[in-house]
Amino acid sequence: MIRENLQRIVEELPKGVTLVAVSKTKPNEAILEAYNAGQRIFGENKVQEMTQKAEMLPKDIQWHLIGHLQRNKVKYIAPFVSLIHGIDTFKLLKEIDKEGRKNNRIIDVLLQFHIAQEETKFGFSFEEAQEMLEDPEFSAMEHVNIRGVMGMATFTENKSQVADEFRALNNYFLTLQGHFFKFNPTFDTVSMGMSGDYAIAIDEGSTMVRIGSSIFGER
Image (cartoon, rainbow, N blue to C red; front, side):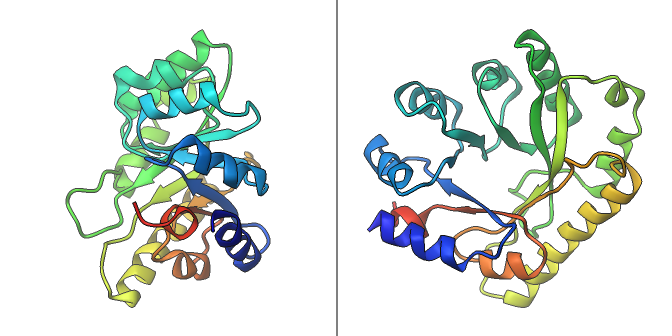
């Protein structure tokens, strides 16, 4: 079923929208089935699980860390991670810059914004992100590259609320692009939308969707 699910979703996605197949908790066999159907970008939310899978699975897979990342775990993924979605503090960004320097690579990241009404979700407010981007310490960083923004909408049946939250995130992206990243052509990513709400997210400007259960089935 994985191959069929994947093909259906890929055909549905508009040009310019990247699919991250969320493979957290899924066995390597399931990931290989998606890989053999052409998928190369996979998202994990736990560092240990991601590093184990990266060792065992094909080396041309691009691994995205989509969950909350603790600073003391950055060193384990710094050598190979393709994109870190959940930058929610300046301290975390500094740690990634430090580990990027040690590994002699520039690590791509997204700034996570708190757009949902649930308190449990992580992320910057717009003011906090602005403050960080204006900080001279940020300007001095050479081993991180901010590619865009990420956010999760409230878990609710209210589609207009979800659309409003996604629209707010896209507005943050456009404002940051105009103010701070005008001369950075790689600032191009709005990561929003999961299995239950990715169609709404795409309507509101998403360029990257994170889809798990619609590909791999429910856990």
